[in-house]
Length: 99
Figure 1 (cartoon, helix red, strand yellow):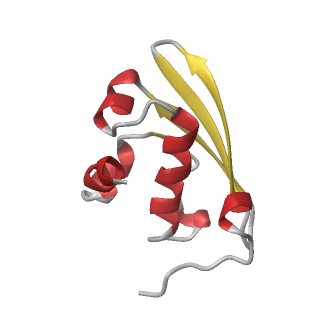
Figure 2: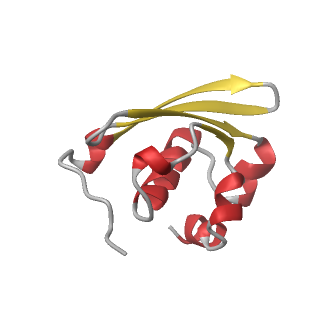
């Protein structure tokens, strides 16, 4: 399986904005690649604790780097709960806690 590639430097490729929402956060993540996509990710406090990250923006960047190593941005769901990643990629939780 070929890894998706991008002409954008990784720091510029994923742009995250986060806002508090109820007991958690909502992140809007824009991925700049051949086609720019925007994704809305809900992150509960329990998910933040499970994946070992206090900084939601950093967790989103690392999560999208994880996803983009496995699929193009156009294949990533446009709206989802963070734990949805683990349903598709069971290694996600282990990778997030390790990095």
